[in-house]
Each structure stands twice: as C-alpha cells, then as structure tokens.
Length: 181
Image (cartoon, rainbow, N blue to C red; front, side, top):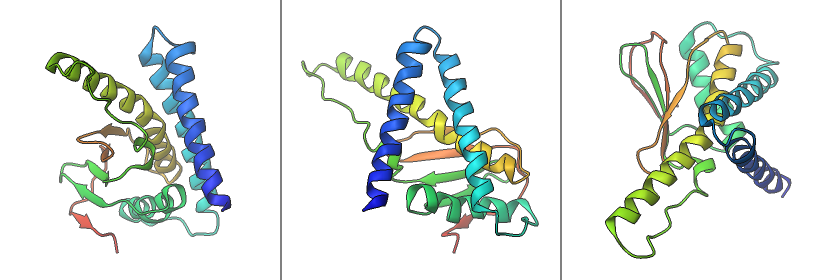
C-alpha cells in the first residue's frame, strides 16, 4: 500500500512542478521552463543512480550501464523494465516504454464542435503538454547516465500516447537488444 501512495505523490508532484514552471515562473519563456525542469530531473537521476549502485561494482562498459538503466533503474522508478532497447548503429540508443506511466494522465479531449481545426489545435496542445512533462524523465536518464560515467544528451519522442521513446545519442555500441533478459 505504501508504494501506491508514493507513486501518486510523485506523479502529482511532477504535474505540479511542470505546471508551476510553465504557467507561473516562466509562462512567457517555455524554453527556460524546459531547461529548469530537465535540470531538476538531472539532479534526481544523478542521486537515484548513486543510491541504486552503491552496493554494486562499477560497470565495465557502456552496454552494462545502459542495461542497468533499462532493467533495474527503470524498475525502481516505474515498476517495470523498458520495453525495448535499440541502437541505430551510429551511436544513438533508443529506450522505448510502450506505456510510460507519467504520460498516462495526459489525454486528448474530443473537440466540442467536431471540426478538424479544433481537433488539430487540441492535438497540438496535448503534444506540447506531453513534451513539457518529458523534460523531467529526460533529465533523470541523463543524470543517471552521467553518474555512471556516460555523459550524453537525452531527448524524447512521442509517437502515440502513452508510448514514449527516449533517445540517447553519442554512445558507440553496436547491436539491437530486445527483452534485455
């Protein structure tokens, strides 16, 4: 029962943080809000990875660290492993979560007048809101990877809610890893 309360509190805190930075602190500067939200996520990810690897030996290569993020780290935060880990063979890893928990509360409200224009505007608004909510987990991943000795940028791609892909460019390991098992 304790975990259910904790999960709802973390999700509520994240929603309120994004709302505060986007609507109050940096209402006219969304790029500054995004940077600040990502920076908070970075600190959280750095500290969590430190805590979760305290009893482990250092990882011998980048692939071990990436697998740790996809299996153990993700499971601690989201109670499930990453659904898929791929690379484009040019140094970019793609971590795919088909039901990303923190996007499950974002939905598209049907257009009141049923017009295509209203539906298009609503979809655009949902996409903007979802992207603001992804700066925090991108920061968490970047902070965790940096703490594990893999400094990189992390971005997110939303194809259809609540599915999400996190892209980590600049890592040079070849192969496609499914199931991570």
